[in-house]
Amino acid sequence: MTGIGRAITGTAEYVYEVTTAYKKARRERDEAIVASVDVLGQKGAALASGLSRRRVRQLLDEAKTWDREGDLQ
Image 1 (spheres, helix red, strand yellow):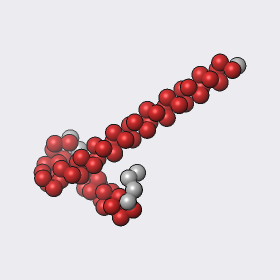
Image 2: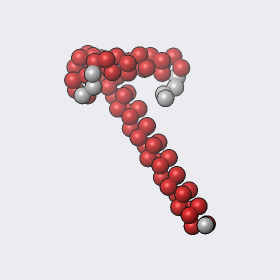
Image 3: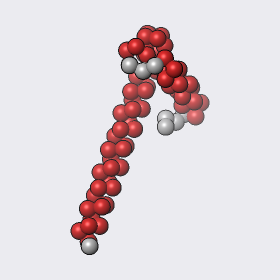
């Protein structure tokens, strides 16, 4: 039974690491898109990123929240 417990713990740790890496990559991507809006505008940023203009606007709104709270989620 000890082997099974270690396997489960190892799997849980791996899932946590993958999830953390995904969230970090997504946050960095979102930051890059928000930064590109100054140069490309919302439409250009949406086209360049493959996101909808609506999603780019949502990212801009979230970025304003990040600035106010000083925290990235």
